[in-house]
Structures are given as structure tokens and as C-alpha cells.
Length: 623
Image 1 (cartoon, rainbow, N blue to C red):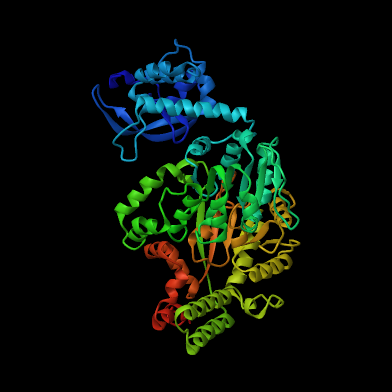
Image 2: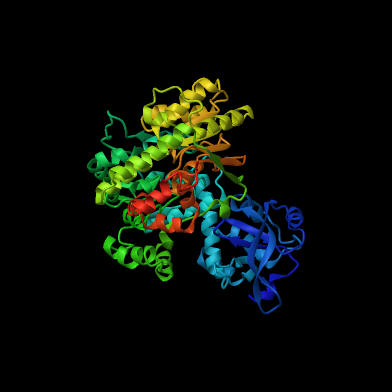
């Protein structure tokens, strides 16, 4: 069809497969044109499309448009009458496509032949091409069929367009063995996996492997979205694997149980296996990764917002579980990709790797697909050392270098011990003297500042999450805030709690109107898998070397369902090791080092003089 058939000045419709929407454009007042034709108004957007500039060529242009999701637009399209005015040929084509079900390949071919450029004008990444009419039509029909299948599956949730696309992508992986759903944290990966299981329910049984702390969350989500699916929890000291598992059964277990009961779990012919928070199997030499690779399944899905946290071999490990052989052997992967990219910064190798993994990794960010999500506001809160902290800090540095840090493995251990001691001094001297020390006020600038901030947050009627990497510090904060702010008991969620107690703390904070306004969490135990959108403030009490870990924690609050701006407060004690961690987080050099190795190992390799220059308070300008 010639480009002139786009009918400039008429309402046009372009299918965007990545977002699962029809994009409406072509007239000055798109919203009015949609209303005049009885079509849903959708939401305003701008998009880059191939737009005709004359009768012979098209060019990339940014157009003002309205995006309407397929579940809403399909019934309206089918009801459009030919006599409706002001519609371009593209609209007529999509009307016929919405009615096309069951009419066979000949009808598809005929409709594709009649499709103008406007109907499939989405641009590729380089803005040099658009999909063919036949490809765009097939994507539309597949998406429309998926919408119908989701309705048939009885999922009691309204999926967003990108989630519908994600479910379709997951379902298509069955012929490939599996893949990685790597959506940014907070975009609803769990709901997409639940929808997949619901549509494959009759082909089960299915297995979900997740951290212990989120087993309860999975049980609630399955009961909420697909209440007719039977769920079995395989966890706890008295667990027993059922002799038979009916097809519709979804079994929930933890990575701990996967390691210990690998033989029993590998004896079951699973249809689908979902690895939630799959960074747990990022180390290919670990028992969990080896056990995950052994599980027999038609479809394996790894879900993680951080498929690469420290080094590229983590990506190899995940794909070795879901799609063994795609990246070759581990040694071959190092030779072809890991070494050239991490050490040589080879752009060619990176492009080649992206091309290989593209069919097996789906990654969307909030900026791309959840533009209605409120923003995050970041602030760094500078804290000062008290005299007591300064003395302890200097004494720790002096003692470590006076005794000597050693060499090799011993040096690495000694440096790690020193860094840990310095971070604990920055937190509060009581971390060094024991949790029974209750004389807390006035001894730590950070501790006192955090108390002031949290008091203000509570007084404003808001809620906050407080993350720390140390259990002792969490207990100190819990005891102090409980008495200082008069809140009753301020709860602390950490790895030492049982699964039921963790679930209770989350449910009370998230859902109870009388729940506590502050929840303290261990960064490792609660940095993933939890939905805590009741909070509008996140306070990072101490720093983790890898910023991705802190981001995971922040996104317990900044995720689908959040309606308010999330204020992220990072406490940094000036002139200390925390300053160095902050600099690593924000510098380009830090990004490179976080890919190629452990930052603590990098510090351990520094000569004594350079290392001391980073740690000594006098060198850093603290008096």
C-alpha cells in the first residue's frame, strides 16, 4: 500500500507491541476524535513514529498521541461501524484485525496486504526501519489472543500493558526452555509469573523457588489472583514431599530447601519452575545454582531485577539454569565475552553478547513502562562524628596498621575486619560494646540524626523503612525508637525470624491502620521480594558496597501500587569510610570496579600508604 494511503488529517492507529497498546494520532485533537467515534480516551503520550512527509517517503517524527490498552480497545474496535467519519485506513485495518479470529491464514494475508504504513509505523532502536505489515499483524493477533486467554484463566487482576506483553513473552519461551524476566524492581514480576502459571495450570505441577522471607508473599499473591489454584508449601523442619502432585498444584519452596532436598525435587517432572529473586543462583559454583540446573522442567524462568550485580559470569549462571548451552561452556563464555568486556571494555564483544541473549532476556525499566509511578527523591544526609566516635575511629586505623595487615588471604581478611569495624564506629560505639549498652543518646551523630528525622516523619503522619546491614544495629534502633518516640514496639525484620513472624510484620505494617509507622529491616533479609508501598520514606542507615543492593531495598517501597513520592535518605558520616563508599557509588570508576570484582578485594590490594590515605580521618579532613 502506498504511503499516501495514510490519509493525512485523519485519525490513525499504530500498534506498539512492546507496550501492548494502540497509539492514536494524526489529528489535532485526538481525544475528541476518539470520543466522537465511541473509542476509549486512553492516556496522553508522545512517541516516535515513521510519519509520511509527502506522498513518497516517511521520516521519524515525534507525535502527540493517545495510548489505549488492548483490553480496553478491542471491544470498541470490534464495534466500530464503517460509516464512522474521519478515520484513516489504519483504523479500518485494526478494526478488521480485532474481528479476525478464526478466519484463517488467507484472511491474515489479505489484511496485511491492505495495511498502510501508519498501522505499523513503530521504529526500531536505530530509527531506520519499521516492522513489516505481516509481522505487526501477527503480533497484534497474538496479543489479542493473550488478552482472551488471560480472561479465560480467571486471573483476578488487571494487568498493565507491559505486563501482558511480559506474560506473552514468558509463554513463548516454552519452546526455548526458558529465560530471564529482568524487569526493574517494582514492576510486578510476581504478577506476570502468577499469570503464566494460571494459563499453564492444567500442564503442571509447577514449582516456585524463592527466598524464605517471601514464601508468604507468594502464597498471598497466588490466593489473591488465582484462588482456585491449589498451593503447597514445601518448607520447614517437618516438610514432606507429597507422593503425587496434581497438575494444577503450585509448590512453593526456598533456596535453602532446594539445596538440601535437591534429589527429591529433581525426581518430579515439573512443567514450570520459577526462580524468584534469582540472584540467589548467580554463583555457578554454589549448591543452589547446581541444584536449580538439575531440576527437570518444560519451562524455567529466572526473575531478577539485577541479572548482573558484580560480574558477567552471574549472567552465564542464570542462563545455564534456564537455557543451558546458549552461552556455551563457562570457560568459553569467559574467553568470548567476560574477559573482553570486563577487562578490555570491548564494545564489539558487548554488542555480540547482547545479540545472543536478546531472545532470552526481557528487561523493562520504570522510566520506560511505568511513567505514572511517582518519582524517587534522593537526599544524602551528612552526619558528624562525636568525640567518642573520632577516638574509636582513629584508634582502629592506628591499631590495624601498627599490627600490620599481612599479605594474601590474611590481608584480605584483616582489611575486611578493619572496614567492618570502621563502619560500626560510624553507626554507633555501642555496636562495639554490645547490644546491652543502653546509654545511646549523644554518642553517635548518625544515630541522633536518624532519630530526629524519623520523629519528624512520624509527626507528619508518614511511614518509613529503615535499612541496616547489622542485626545489632537494628536491635539498638528498635529499642531506642520504641522508647524515644513512644510508638510501642518498633519492629525489626531480620534473618533470625521465622517465616510466619516475617509475614506478620509485613502484613501489619502494610495493611493494618494501627500498624507501626516505622519498620526496621535487615538489608540482606528484606532487601528483596517484599511489597511495602505503605512507606513513603526509605532511610539507609549504613552503606553497602554494591549500590544495586541498596536499590533493591529502596524498591520495596517504590513499586507498582505506590501513589506518593518516595523519599530516599542516605546517611553518610563525613570524612570516613562511608565517604569512600558514597564516592564509589557515584563515580564512573566505581561502576567499572563493581563489574570486574569485589570492591573490598580492590581495597585489600592497595599498598598500605594508599589504603591509609583513604581511611585516616586526618587525611580526609576531619578534625
